[in-house]
Amino acid sequence: MLESVKDYYGQVLQSSDDLQTNACCTDEGMPEFLKPILSKVHDEVLMRYYGCGLVLPEQLKGLKILDLGCGAGRDVYALSSMVGEEGLVVGLDMTSEQLAVAREYQDYHAKIFGFDKSNVQFIQGDIDKLDDLPFEEGFFDLIVSNCVINLVQDKQSVLKQAHRLLKPGGEMYFSDVYCDRRIPQELVKDEVLYGECLSGALYWRDFLEYSQAAGFTDPRLVKDRILTIENAKLEQKIGHMTFYSATYRLFKIAELEGACEDYGQAVMYKGSIEHHPHFFALDGHHKIETGKVFSVCGNTYRMLNQTRFKGHFEFYGSWDTHYGIYPDCGTLMPFKPADDAGVACC
Image (cartoon, rainbow, N blue to C red):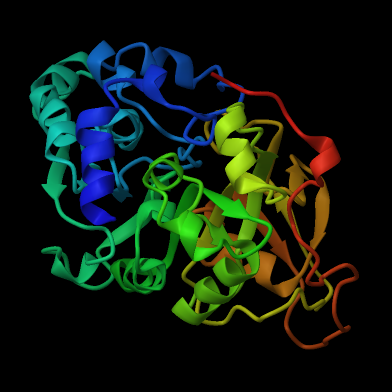
């Protein structure tokens, strides 16, 4: 299957027009600040983009970032503009054809972003073998990935090694494909379904358990959408299984608890994060308006207080009194129901 994926993304797919479904296709409104950045990314790099989300979170200046499965480098170059010349973006991919395109335009992007030298690096390798990378534990501030982990055989290893490579307070912010059930092995072996980011997708409960076992105790869902597939032949193969594209953020914070526990704490956003003057959306359930005291659980408090976001908030309360668990902190499927299905994006 590893060789099949290499062939699919190296030889079969020459542009996003060659995709047979809408799984590897971003369906999000483009933020205004991002449009001028992407307009500077070379057309050949953009043409070979196969992501399913936007993996460009907030407050990136000066960060060291690792992109797992970077492909031809669209996200790497967008991130390189946002971290600035003092930052670093490392792109890891197993497909030599994709990396050849990415490397060809390093000097081009350094020049167009106004840098004296390139702040990106590309490495060929497998993302389920992150222990082979020449970086020490805790080297990266942020790890991103865009519709790639579903293509990997050992997904648990990816999460464990990503946790190891992040510094305390660091974050894994990534988009991928998930299923509402475990996928039968005969479909996992289907090379087209696998290459289209479907049959390698994790059952959502397994993903949450793998994340927690890796040390990411409280995975936060940022956004999600139903995948409508838009291919009758492949829809017939998958039957009643429902697939979702979802973006999660996972923080490396040792003290996080397994549920949303109430300590009577609150935060107030200062409106000081670039491009986010009116509110900060930590995840799909925490849209924190500027200047408003906002009640939070202990985990959310720590996600804001022990990360790169700390200087942008005022913090209230202590850990002296525990008031129990927050309501609705349960185990229901976090994604939107199927009757909320979206539309195809390409």
